[in-house]
Length: 336
Image (cartoon, rainbow, N blue to C red; front, side, top):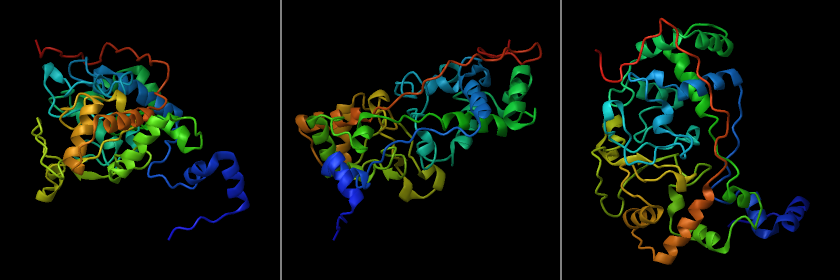
């Protein structure tokens, strides 16, 4: 049986925050506040920022990391599946890059262990950036401005794919979104949420949503089957974690997406089939929980979800170092 130990500190907290604030201060909620990013190597982060926005890492010279993970649009592209090289239709919805350092692994099926491993994938994927690691390195090391930045970040002017992906990952690790209204409530600001939003959070907890959507990222920390109570009829051929493990038990198991900034990261699910939060809440209630939310309940949960939007990344747009005469040129329409 849980017992609340009353101490002088607890009395002060209770007087300051109220009983609900004391419970939050004690860490009783299944969701924790997002912490601001800490930058250990500013030069590495600055290099990674430039590489993140640099379309010259793609064969066409047109697609950058930001193309599919647009930092002006919640760290995604707001379309069902991304557009790749030669207008290729992507096979799966682009997850947000915001708070992605909190994920248990990267990609919907978790095939990349961390952000560094993930960063190298799209560069060499023929359906995405359509380049290869050798060419990407040749492009970057041919640019004097980049060589100087590698020297500053790594203490060496050697340019390789390990350094490129490490720098991109270092920048992505800074893309945290703290200070949402919900975080302010968690920290004791009882006026941060409306009655309707608080009722939505209670429904979110009492219905069982927090079994998967918990922790600082409100998700991202486990793989779960899509379609627990009833099968989910996906418009994508992706089968999830089974592609990595080979285990049939992992079929249709996908990484639980973060719900941070979820009002900005539509459409929803791995196949991008839900265009609105209302539709997403309805579907998840039905196929995961066996519950049919009323319109009023749905609206309250949606209202709560919108309180998870935090401070968006804000920085000066990087000016990329110009190509040199020897820099391999893009091939947007194939070789002539």
